[in-house]
Image 1 (spheres, helix red, strand yellow):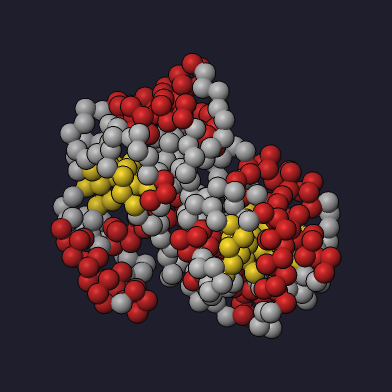
Image 2: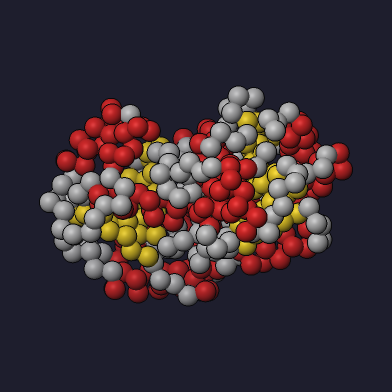
Length: 374
Ligand code: UDP
């Protein structure tokens, strides 16, 4: 029985016309089985990046179904988040120096969070990503704990995996976004599960062309030439500087503009540094527009993903790429690399194009922009 008196903003049944009766009935069936269960999700940021995007939509919807699903945020210092960003990078293949001090800070923050995160009365805990991973080690484990890992784990750094393995193996299961991320060295069930977007959220709901153009003009954009866009956190793995290089090649041959729309996540301290690199690479080029932390973020993302002639996702590593799902949902052509979850979504030549490197990104962008419907 649902405890709160909060009125549902979007009843799950509104999704029937999109997902169909069978899917919604199945969701009700599972929700009925979970009535009375008290579940909690724990991650490390309320906004910015795909995890926060998923949780902001999903947690409310699951509560609307009568399942008591809570959401807690791990609290950490700047140093802690610098260390966990290094972990994130190392999971995606970067090198790392694992000092005693880094491990101590990582473990201490998790110990402190465990002290102030009371989980009595809960029936299940779902922990997202490496930041809160060790939390589990500070509780007497009586209920199922699941670790949901979102980034790209095709080439994890072996030193980091070795250090975190004892924490990971305390969990009952691990959820990954692609079977490519399966780790033979981990003794834990690894379940593949695709992330989701919310078709009725402000970011994805239908929008008229007039409204989309009005929102983009408010960002200072002029709509007098076709737009190539990438919407992503300012992160090296999203290769925004590579996007600029590819665009400059396209621009030599076609009169178009580039929009790089990005935000910063509180658990990603590298964002401001990458943003500065992007500004430098753009060199005040009047056809390159960089939107940082746009006000009215969700509707602006919606407008941009609908109005662009091409959406790029030039990631070097990628967990799943909700940005690709969002653009494909709007039927905007996508050019993406073969990183992580992108080839699970972009069917080369049918729903967009898969590319490798800057020259091919430029060549494919030019092809799509020339052949676009006006
Ligand atoms: N996003 C946003 N505003 C921005 C840039 C990105 O709302 O300026 C959103 C984007 O629409 C998507 C999410 O952030 O929903 C990024 O998720 P994705 O899985 O693509 O990448 P992640 O950041 O998790 O690596």
